[in-house]
Image (tube, rainbow, N blue to C red; front, top):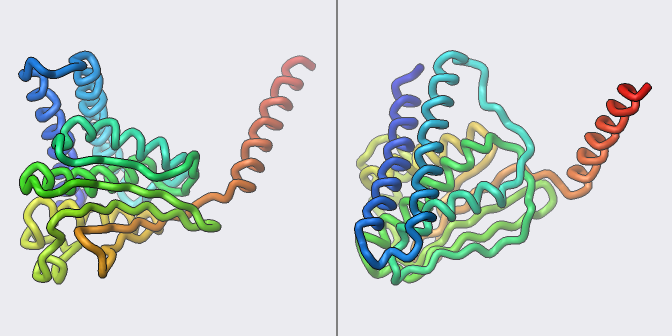
Length: 238
């Protein structure tokens, strides 16, 4: 496997394990209200890291097979990322979702998780370091066969010199956060999606555009699956 791909997987696994460490740190505080839930989230993150390792080994063994895209509910992936990251958001920062689900897209579910985790993890990292960020907002909307996910914050924004080198693989584009953005862009592109930095907004706003599945198509696919199951049952009865 190419060294760049290995470095990308290592970056995302490290971020996932780093988030586990932050969850476990909260257990040391006696004011922690829900120890059981923190432990559950930590286990979920560890499982994600293990899944990434498994996918890494699969990609290494199946070089050239390409990404495995399928239809799935993007809202479930968004909810999963939020549930795992929410506990490490500073008390002074609000993390919110403005979306109606389900919203179906055609992509690799693991890739979308990694994209969203990188973007939201970066924003939370800035909030924890700077202390001046008051909100991190995510919105999801569908227009025809296009699904747009926006992640916006009211933080200090990106300096012009960082914007000029954004999404590049070299770490000079903003340290590990810059590297995470390059990973997110490449994961989006290999799924036929787009990841862009919005201009003319306060703070920082990223937009992901994915191939969506219209409600009519979803209903037709569900009906086809139901019909197939009925025919299978009837054939067994016969």
